[in-house]
Structures are given as C-alpha cells and as structure tokens.
Length: 161
Image (cartoon, rainbow, N blue to C red; front, side, top):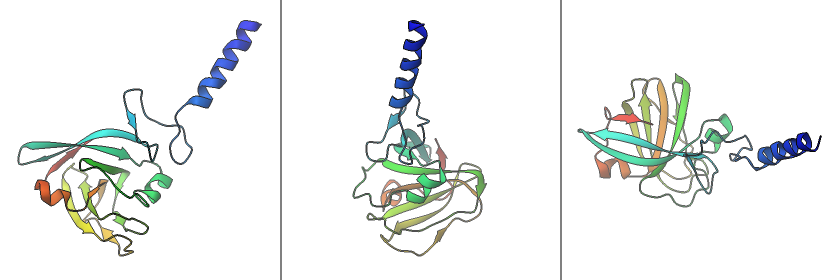
C-alpha cells in the first residue's frame, strides 16, 4: 500500500513540475529542446538557406492560437539570431500586425514548399496595418527588423525547422 501511495505522490509531483508554456498548457518541449526564459515557449534551431549558405537561428515556437496572438508583443529586445516561428497547420493565408510590438520586425512568410514567399521588412512598431502573405503559408518567421536584408535573405530562400 505504501509503495502505491508513494508512486501516486511521485506522479503528482512530476505532473506539477512539468514545464508549462506561457498560456499554461503543458510544454511540448523535449528534454533536448530549450525553453525561452521570457515566454516559456520551446526554442528550436531554424535554418534559412540563401545562395547555398545556411544561416541558423534559435526561434521560439508559437504553436497555439493564444501563443500566436501574443507573438512578440511587449518584447523589448531580441538577439540577432533569435526569432519566433508561427507554424500554420493547415497552411493558410496569413496576415500579421504590430499592435503592442515594441521592436521593428522582419515578417517572413514561408510558403507550403518551404521557400520564402514574401517578406514584410522592418514592420513598424505598434502599427495596426495588416501585413499579409502572398498565398498560403506553412509558417511565418519573425526576426529583428532589417536582419533579413543584412543577411541577404530574399523570397525564394529555403526555410527549415
């Protein structure tokens, strides 16, 4: 009986200590996946390949609708090779805005073929103007404003995460 009770308590303790995302859902991060200290979202490697040269970013994954609605709002800074990816499953037309977003962003729309369809460069902080994809996308990548141009990232480049 004591063994069963101990196992029950251990299970409850493990459940209580499991990582949680910003919206309170259990984290989908594996033990090898990092978790962002501010958002609590899983962080993974994302590669953009331009002219045969890969560039690796560490991006937060905003997978739930609540996480995607918040995005990078209120974030005061982000590292040069950091960003956020918004997976779209199923792929769809996407439109983003900068409401409550403090830092300028490059909003990169990733088509269903894994290639960049278009980039809304240097999106203006706090703007409520919609910035839309050209066609259906499987994901939207947000980087620091101007970073895509700095690295030569353009429509047609391959994105993988």
